[in-house]
Image (tube, rainbow over all chains, first blue to last red; front, side, top):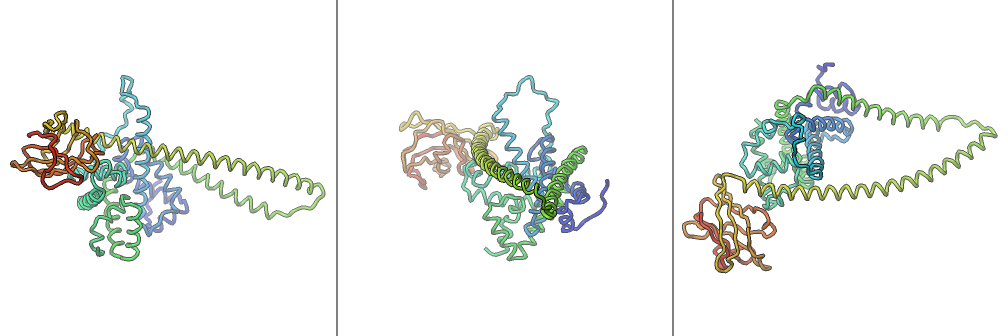
Length: 179
Length: 270
């Protein structure tokens, strides 16, 4: 079913809270690609990205009551759900891989490899290349890997204050590239 | 810091992208409530990010939509079932009580059964809570060790990236007479001029002492940073040095010194 209706953001949120089917259809048609573009560069694998997108929509459905318009726009809220779900999945997956620790042998079935080949060319990653190396690494760790500033300071062996300043400067630059 | 500086500090972007700490988030929400400029700046970035994300979105596979909406259907049914359950309960409590002799016995019997059932409920709820506690504890423990491992792995990967980088000039520093067994290597990034230090072999410094790296620039030693001994097992980032003919390490009082005073341990030329 095509949904041609447009909603104001507050109307849309109200309908989502009532679990209105058309509102969710509208949400999917308008935002699924944007959210998929957030998820894919983090998880880097289309199969995993599909699972995460499903989880994200389930979470939106379940948690819409907790959305607070005072704290930000609906899309910002969804973006953060998508980013958190991606990072959580990535962490549990890499943990599983670490435990299995299987060497790549002849039995690897390359045809089922779902790794996304062009992940460097989408979303924020595309503009990440324009940053200085030192900034790129920090944004990579903070935004794409979900490390806290404290953890990044430990990983990189640089002071916490420097981490914070570099990330903030980098974000301001990224913002300018968005235009 | 005034409001304009606060807005320009990168906190807006940090908050919206979910990279701010809890304290920063709380402060930002207070600032939004107190100053409309802050809130407007946030909304402007949010809209910009939203437009960029929509414009640069990637269509998920077509089959995914029906799969997701089938899942939402299941969730919706769950909600309905729960809803109707509460309605039934209230309907029952309003139904008239018919007074009949046999019914009293039945009532007593059902109360006894109810009490028994409540007792069992409490017993199982307690057991459930015990296991839930155990489960949560082990899950937290697992998550923590997972995080620690990831940090360690990232640190080593980072070290390896530096060693592998073809743009690095490598300076082997050999042991001096004070310590002939000592050895350390400087990796100097020819593009960024960043300096990294790998300790091959240095004796552990005594308490209150710290190794200091020096770049030799036109015959003069220039401070290139202190070695944090905790990072001596990885490739440690040091100071940025624009040009140098060599590098050396001396043992100095912790915190370092503007000109070398302590014993030189290793030295190497570009």
